[in-house]
Length: 395
Image (cartoon, rainbow, N blue to C red; front, side):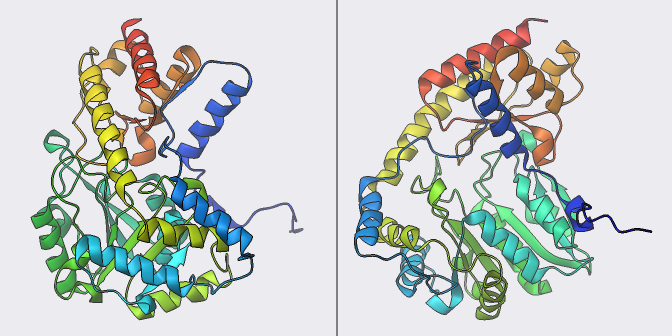
C-alpha cells in the first residue's frame, strides 16, 4: 500500500477537540457576525489580573528578563509555590518536589504521560473536567468512571471509589471544588480516599485549580495529611485564583522522582514556562491576597442569583454549587418537553435559536446537564437566563 503523507498519526484518534473550546469558538464566530450572544461557556474569571501582578511583569520586561529559564521554572517561583501551599494548607514541599508548567492543563497532561502505562486504570468521578478523559486515553490508560450522587450535590465517597479499584488501578484523580458541578468533597471522605489509595499503593491526584473558591468552610488539601507526600500529587494553577488564565502558569507538587519525570518530558515539549509570566506569578503568590476574597464575594452573589433563577424555570433542577463558579443544571424534564434527546442537541439549539452559549453535559460525562459559567456580570447572567427560560417555555 502506498503511504499517504497526509495521513495523521493514529494516536490522535484517542482524543477529541475540547468541548469548551468548541463552544467558545462557535460563540466567537457568531459574535464576529454581529449576533448578540450571551456566553456562559467560558471557564475563566471576568476580572482583570490584579495591578500588582501586571506591574511585576512590566518590571520583568524592563529588566530584560526575557531569556530561557530552567525547564521546571525559576527557583524563586518554585519556592513561592511551596511557601503559598504551606501557608494555605500546612504542607511542607521543597523546590525539588515542585515543577512549573504551562498552565494547569499542562501538568495534568504531563502526569498522565509520566504515570500511566497502556492498560493502566485511572478512576475518574463523574461529572469530570473535559480534559481528564482525553489525556488518560492519549496515555493509553483506561478511564474507570465513578458516578457521584447528584441528589446529594454530586457527592463522592470513599466507598464509591473503593468499589471501582482493581489490580490495574494506577491513579485516582479528584477535582474539588469540581469543574463542572461545583461539588466539594467532604474533608473526611477525602481522608478516607487517601487512606485507601495509600494502603494499595495507588497515586492520588488532587486537582486544586479552584481550591480558594469555596462558599462554606475552609480550603483543604489532602496533601497536608501525614505521609501523604509519598502517594499524593497536587495539580495546581494560578489561572483562576489570580485571574491569570492567559498567563499560563500551572504547577505540580509531587515526589522528586515524579517531578524528574515531568521535567524530562517537558524538556522536549515546551521547555520553560514564559519567563515574564513566572515573575508575575511570584508576585501573585507573595503579594497581597485580598483580590481572591473580592472575587469570591462576587461569585457568591452571582451563585445565589443563578441558582434562584434556574430553579424558577419549569423543567430545570439544579444543585447549588459549593465551590468554583459553575452551575450544572439538570434539564431532563425540559428536554423531554422540547422533544430534545441530549444536552448536546439542547446546547446547539439554544445557541442557534436563543443565542446563549453553554457547554453540553456530554463533555463532562452526563447527557442531561449543561454547564453554565457565572464568571460574568449579573447583567449578562440575567439576560442569558431570561433567554433560556423563554427558550424552554417556547414549546
